[in-house]
Image 1 (cartoon, rainbow, N blue to C red):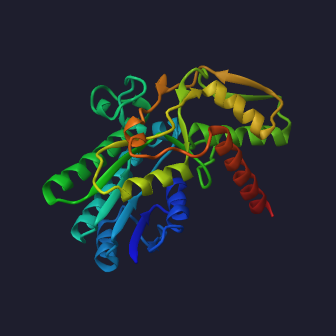
Image 2: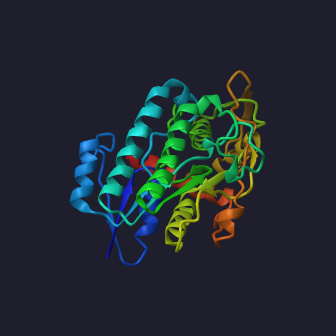
Length: 310
């Protein structure tokens, strides 16, 4: 049996990894809640690795949020993420972990990167100001993995996912990313028969979205490659405008009112589309269309909300 530690197993990505790895033969999953293992506490993480000695680690734990959350809590976004990844990567190295997968984010790339964004765009220009602290922490985690590999001969791999969504996402209207926030907002508006729904920004920026279960498939695929492929983008290779996303969400949720775009709110980068040619060359492709993924996620959201009200 291969002992596999999923850090952050209750989050969007971590829960998808648990679902995927539970179908993998010969895997013993290691998961601990934050109450049992606080990854920001160095001594606790060191003791965990010395005691449990996992064979593989998926580092999916992170403090994440949308534009509003990043602007409101910049110190927490950089400090918590630095602590988590530093402690886990160091603990994995000291305990002899065979392989580790570090999950970064597409926000590590410059604000005005060429589109689609190749992995080579990293550190070629200024970052997007609205999420710079989070992006800098993720860049540091990527470089930490590379440095451990060079100095200690570890096999720590790095992937950069595009915008994600799915079950166990954060649907809080103040701190969530655009897709779950829109889903929650349109759901509320439908129940309340609200005549209009306000969408932040102009609706013009283009974004790419990937279902978390597709990301989990990609992560296991990358971990099972015989050699470290280097930094890999993970996405669909397709994007749409925020206005088009909002219209699709209206159709899925069944909202009949009007949309209003609040141009006083920040848009973020004009476009974020990843070049996925490198991971595609390894044989991986996403399985779900955006519409299918939104429909599945909305069904999960409705079921969860109904269970919470019962």
